Image 1 (cartoon, rainbow, N blue to C red):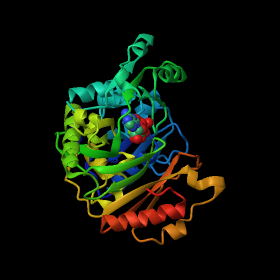
Image 2 (cartoon, rainbow, N blue to C red):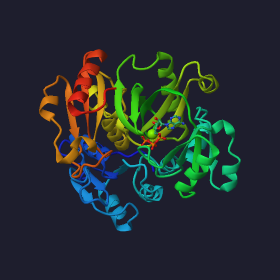
Image 3 (cartoon, rainbow, N blue to C red):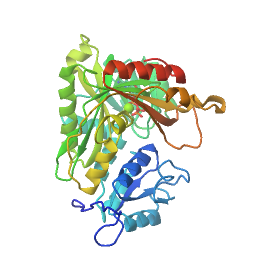
Amino acid sequence: MSQPHCLPGSTGWSDNGQPATLGVMGGGQLGRMFVHAAQSMGYFTVVLDPDTSSPAGLVSHQHIQRDYLDTQGLAKLVQHCAAVTTEFENVPAAALATLAATRPTAPNAEAVAIAQDRIQEKAHLARSGVPVAPYAVIENAADLATVADSLLPGILKTARLGYDGKGQLRVSNRAELASAWDALKHVPCVLEQMLPLADECSVIVARGWDGACVHFAPQRNLHRQGILAVTQAYEGNLPPALVDKAVTATKKIADELNYVGVLCVEFFVLAEGSPESAALGGLVVNEMAPRPHNSGHYTLDACDQSQFDLQVRTLAGLPLVQPRHHSAAVMLNLLGDLWVNGCIPPWDTVLALPGVHLHLYGKLQAKPGRKMGHLTVTAATAAEANAVALEAARLLGIEAF
Ligand code: ATP
Ligand code: MG
């Protein structure tokens, strides 16, 4: 499907009298922030998500409460939308392929299918010539028996449907590997060598239908229990030599996929002086997300274009301009753990701090580990942003970083 012509109208209506409407598959917080960005440019929005109270469904003009593969739901989406995107990488690629038959759909089903499957993803990354953690594919008992000793200790990860550290088990020897594969019910997996990490970072790019590509500078990410906890985004957050390398690798991956939309690539920065770092060149790709990413939420408050603005622009075929990062930023994820025993976090004291931007996703139920919102601190300097974010973390009972 070729580039859409989907200009926003000042009233939200296009020249032919039809609403200029953009659709999104998935109703989570990423969809909600896409909807906000689209609506602020005058678009109408439609969300397809089976959940009756999905964060994006609650704020969209329309919410089609159907399953992702439901024929009638997809037909209705097509009927209303000029173009469709996705916010959830586990949307079945077949649904995107159906949409793409009649509407510009970005990212495309092939790119999403690759990102949905660690086995395909690693093969694609190897084709793009970017280093990944040494790994083996485990699909049967013979694969398990022939795993190289050098991959242990390692992490066994299910090929599909993992997120926030779910579907992963750390193993230090062959006996643990065998029982981990039993625990994961013998689904296809990859075993990755456990690497000595100095840091983690990610790069977000937006690539248009014509191949033009803009990017945000790499952000530094801290994970806890496999879930993103803190993102630091300011100049000097990472060794300068890695910054260009990470951006170049991300653009290469996007080009190889002929990607349209917002793409995030997560990297491991390896401990300097380690044999792994010497062998792999200091930086390896962990994985990619075919959508805006949690580590890019700071762009809402610290950049002149957010990752969601760029998602709207790519989808609608509007010009892409290199975003300007104007404030040092630190983002803290707000997990359901903060709402323990029905308590409401002390927003009044947190919001009294300078440069605090609170984003809550409208989720009706708090659960441990569930992403309920995030908070971004912006400041003139990195030192100030970190100091205020540390104070906000202390007030909220989030571990210092
Ligand atoms: P997300 O939802 O954040 O993408 P995920 O479930 O896909 O998470 P991964 O990104 O594969 O999980 O891993 C989660 C975290 O576990 C990583 O961010 C990193 O901290 C750690 N980790 C994963 N693989 C390795 C590895 N090979 N060596 C060292 N640490 C690792
Ligand atoms: Mg990850």
